[in-house]
Image (tube, rainbow, N blue to C red):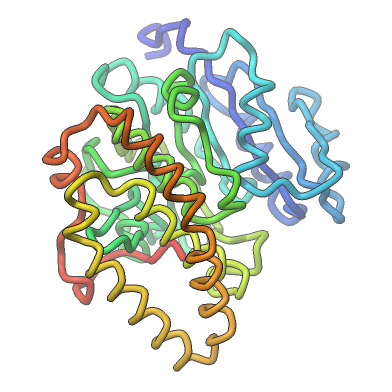
Length: 333
């Protein structure tokens, strides 16, 4: 099986860590047990105050880039990309709270070989706390601008699941062609964290790149392990601010104007819902800052849309058009 893998497909694995002490040793130990080892492993530590650096230093194959401030998920990954070896044609992102199966990377490399029309690949995320449940099977982008991890909380399929196209991968465990990443500018550092992987996935689509979900490539994911949990004020603020920016930047042409009323409605419903749940201050601050950032976001939109390769029809086909109230996976925010 190993002989089928092209030796030119060198992979640099990048981990951005902030106070990931509870997970790091398990994460790195799993990486060291791969059936096909990555070309290099780069870990950016965002000024952790725990024992993270001490743990990383126990793994001599890991190149540590220790920062004196928190650069966020977006900034940390972009920084690591600049340090990647020139020999690497592929970038794998891995969260410190994601623990990969031994054949995680080999399955991704096999998918590259057998699917030359794809440049982005997403792993199957399994709930680390309950491995009988999915954590995510790729990310969906709804026509309203809502985003979610497909299949979150559903039982692991009992029959063999096949590779298939998805809108974008969850960056907790994902593989990107390095040239595609660089062409589209990497992660937007204004996001800091949350939804930046969907924004990158959308921009990659606009540039004509496609994403394949690879269920044979498995990572066990805790999820929001270092940011206070899925429903923290931190995740709520960044997620709901960045959701607006992503729609404004990326929704192309006539679709932007046709779907804008639906996007505004989504935001109004979100505000009402979170106020009713006692999170009024955070959601109002998120939406206020989203609006304050619109002039800069609109400038980014002009640059992004000017270089669009994908047709309006291709983007429309990839948008999720189900009713928002119907059953789906877990909101990414």
